[in-house]
Length: 125
DNA sequence: CTTTTGACGCGTA
DNA sequence: CTACGCGCCAAAA
Picture 1 (cartoon, rainbow, N blue to C red):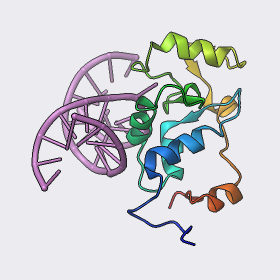
Picture 2 (cartoon, rainbow, N blue to C red; picture 1 turned 180 degrees about the horizontal axis):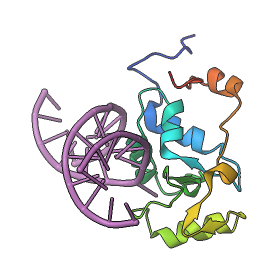
Picture 3 (cartoon, protein in one colour; picture 1 turned 135 degrees about the horizontal axis):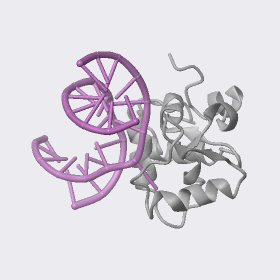
Picture 4 (cartoon, helix red, strand yellow; picture 1 turned 135 degrees about the vertical axis):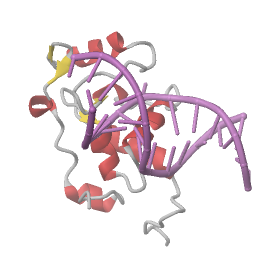
């Protein structure tokens, strides 16, 4: 049964890990690229952005709930940032001066038990 | 195998 | 506030 995590040879790859984690961000909350990266082994903030940029059309993940560390929507998001802001505002997220207050809307992340069970990093070393 | 391509983060000036 | 540099690295071609 090789279901243990194998560094360097993950069955799904880093991008798939990112997608699964992003899929758990609840409506009305946001996560930052760096935050997601801190939970995915071998991943950096940039990789998260690249992963989302490479998201195949048709897969249903809340990509719009991932923003940068300053609480702003990235300018190169597909289709324009206004669309992403609209999606977030539709979930009740308030923008002040074009920013989201992470202290109010930042996601705390999944339960550590879920992280451990699915091979993510529980602590950011 | 090599090269290109990027939704970032953070320190510094 | 702006501007710049550099670290970081998987995936696709």
